[in-house]
Length: 89
Image 1 (spheres, helix red, strand yellow):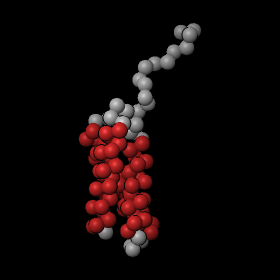
Image 2 (tube, rainbow, N blue to C red; image 1 turned 180 degrees about the horizontal axis):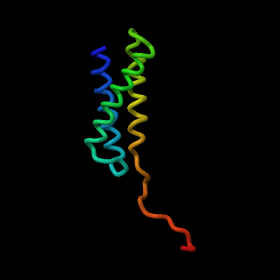
Image 3 (cartoon, rainbow, N blue to C red; image 1 turned 45 degrees about the horizontal axis):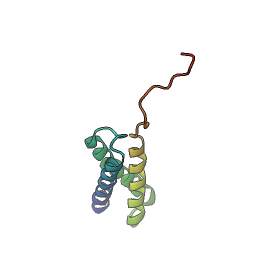
């Protein structure tokens, strides 16, 4: 279980780092993104390991990365921050 947690934390951190590089203008502070990716993947590994049981190392890592990706997607802001008003206003 320790290797699953460590591996998932590293994968989540790597996923968050790539997301922070690619979407730097649409994500909040880089430290928040990196922590969210790492902790989200550890949580995903815990949930996946609890659901599947021991002996499913690769499936646990896939579940961890999936949960980290979902949590990182919740941090993405819209592309434009300007207000869109109608012509009547």
